[in-house]
Structures are given as structure tokens and as C-alpha cells.
Length: 404
Length: 68
Ligand code: HEM
Ligand code: SF4
Image (cartoon, rainbow over all chains, first blue to last red; front, side):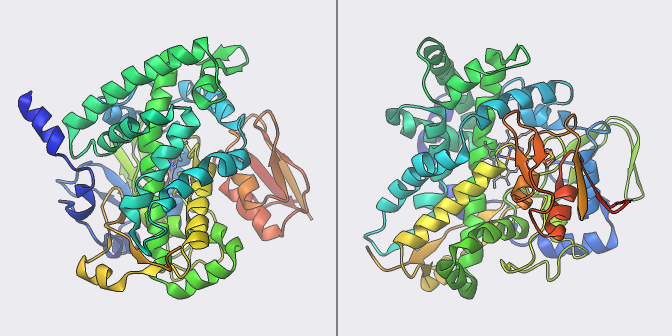
């Protein structure tokens, strides 16, 4: 026990950015080869998740759409130690549909337009306040890693004094794969904390998401406490980790393509396309998983009942039969739906929020940090790159700009 | 001219169609999509939006031919 406590004290969540033991830089060349040569492969032995991996866009989409053949139960099982009993993303029908329509109801009652100006922009601005006068920043540590967690804290309606603690729990939960003890302990503490908040909101309703979840009603159905906690706990891995990584990839794509960044600076209406292109080119989450509940076939490969099936989102998004020069970041390409948010009944509930957060972050950076560019010396010295096999994002984002 | 139908029993309220073709699709207060203007966007956008529907709730015809 003492050991665990000491490890916790020494633990620097930021270390993951520089010293990732699985520093997979470029899975894309190999993925492209598989897309061409073997559309479905048995995932290499030793990989964290074994199963049949699917590489082409249309095949990934058919797996994700067919939730009667391909169950999400494997996701629930993999999350069982640190998530609630009913994580939406890991539930099958008919439970999933009931939960989804209830939480969607709670999400909808607040319009995103009001979120952007009242909640998200102030959070982003506060982060930028921290470095605007310096003319230089490391945007992963000083902004992208932090702002989506804070947005969730604000949407939930947590008191400002609790943000620091909430961030610590979030970091530990997000890093649960590498540090299971800390992750599980944080998940338990967060759960106890949320129980207190929910109890309070039942007595004193606020204008926030927790109150909304506690009171939402659809066709006489309501969410029970366990369902509410499961949803709230899911928001950190599902909503914060993905969004911070996606924002990092968007900034990396723009900063390494200065002509595109200049075009965007001059014409912000390109932001919508820039976000779509970034999540196509380097989605923050490369794979998801399903289990075949009966014998099935994908692209001519027989999948026995009980086998895991892993749609590779990162590969599907670069399917050359769907996109020209698919390996390049090009915000001027003709936009068409990507698979980064999944598809089918589990398609991301937070996709409009995530897109808006990313737009707001880049918009405010460009407004407040004139002449924003990569710090070329630091990029070279620190060997800055996007890395990761399951989750991908930049190691760092050292930038220079004209100080405010 | 395209003819568009949305199957309300299949629509999960994702808002994907209104993201891709916001002149054509909108979400009602009940969270179900509806067609507000079948000619609200260029045809290719409307078709992309239809194909992108996560639950295949959108059907599109050109003349008598079903294209989505
Ligand atoms: C760029 C950022 C994001 C990406 C790339 C992303 C990606 C995904 C993907 C791929 C899925 C489907 C997983 C599957 O089918 O197995 C999903 C589901 C989900 N996402 Fe996101 N997400 C992002 C942001 C968010 C945000 C901000 C929220 C918070 C509200 C969120 C909440 C959820 C939830 C609750 C689900 C489960 C939906 C269901 O099972 O019905 N996500 N996301
Ligand atoms: S894309 Fe499909 S599921 Fe989503 S709102 Fe439109 S019709 Fe409904």
C-alpha cells in the first residue's frame, strides 16, 4: 500500500507525452499495405487486443452499423474495472437505445450555441491568459491537455474550487491503461464525489448537466442513479481524452502546413473543414471493438461467433478508394463523412460538442496569438511528433507568436 | 429534384445529416430529424448526408430511382 501511495506522489501525468513506451510513430504505412493486401487480418499476437482487424472504410462501416451481429459488450467488459455498470458505449440493445435517448435528451436541452460563448470560449481564454504575454508556449501542457476536462467540469456544473481535483482524477483515469492502480483509485474517488454532487442537485436543482440527467424524462422513463454515474464517469475518457488529442492533431496538422494555417487565419470559415480533415488524417482514437455474437463474414473472411472484431478507424479514414492523396493533411480537399466518430447506433454523442470545442480553441488561439507558428528549434531539439497506436496525438506543440 | 424521406422510427437524432447539409435537414424538439427544404443544399451534399446517416434512416430518390 505504501508503495502505491509513493508511486502516486511521484507520478507525473505529463510524462506520458515524452516517454511513451509504445512510441508508435507511423502506423499508417503498414495500415495502407494491409488495406491493399489483406482487408481483414488477425491482429498480431502480443498486441493488446487480439481479434480480427478490419481496415477498409466500407467494411468498418458495415461492422459498426450491424449491431445485431457485432456486440459492444467487449467494450463494457474492458471498462468494467474503472467505469460504471452501464457505460453507454459498451451497452447493447435494447438497454442502449433507452439510455441513449435519455442522455441525448439531457444534452439537447442546452443548445451548443449557448455552450460555445458562455462556457467553452471562457475556458479557452483562461488557458491562453496563462501564456499570451510570453510570446511562446507549449500548447499540449498549457492548453490542449487541460481545456476539454475543464469544459466537462463546467458543463457538469462543478464548483470552481473543485476543478484542480477534478483534473487530477481525470488525468489518472485517462492514463488508466499505463497506471491501473492510480486510475482505479481515482475512478472510485470521483464516483464518491459525484454521488455527493448528485444528492445535492436532487435537493437544489441547478442549471447544469447533472441536474438535467437527474430530472430528464422520456415516455415515462427516467435514469436511475447508477445509470447517471455510469454516464458521468464515461465523459472523461470518451469526451476529454479524445478531444484533447484531436485538438493536438489539428494544431499539428496546421502548424506543419504553414500555407494552410495562413489561409485559415485569413478565412475562419475554413475551420469546419480543417476540423474534419484533422480527425480524418489523424483521429485521436484509432480503433474500437466489437464481438461477433454469431458466425459472420467481413470482406470474405469468416468470423466465428465469439471472436473480437476491431474496426481500424485510422485506416478506414485513409481509404484511397474514398479519398485522393489520403495520406496528406489537406483542408482544401472535398469534405465527406469520416468514421472518426464511429457510425451506427453508437455514433459519438459528443461529436458536435467536440467539433465546437476544437473550433473555439483554434479560433481563440489565432485571434490572440498573432503570427502563431511552430518553434522550429524546439521541434527539432525535442523531436516533436504524433505518436501512439490506439490513441494518437503530438508529444508536444512548442509554438512562438507575437506577445500580447 | 430529389425526394427525401426520413424514417422517424430509425432516426437516433445524431444530427449528422444537419451537419453535412444544414440547409436541407434539421432536428425537431423531439430529437428526430426532418426535411426543412429538399433543395436546401447542392445535391451532392444531400446525398453525402443521406449516406452518412448512422442508422440508415434516410432514403433518397432521384425521379423514380432510389439512390440512397
Ligand atoms: C474528437 C473527439 C471525439 C472523438 C474522436 C470521439 C470518438 C467516438 C467514437 C469513435 C465513438 C463510438 C465508439 C464505438 O462505436 O465503439 C464515440 C462514442 C461516444 N462518445 Fe465520442 N468522441 C469524441 C468526443 C466526445 C465528446 C466531447 C463526448 C462528450 C460528450 C463524447 C461522448 C461519447 C459518448 C457518450 C459515446 C457513446 C455513444 C453510444 O454508445 O451511444 N465523445 N466517440
Ligand atoms: S443522420 Fe440519420 S439518425 Fe442522425 S439525425 Fe439525421 S436522420 Fe436522424
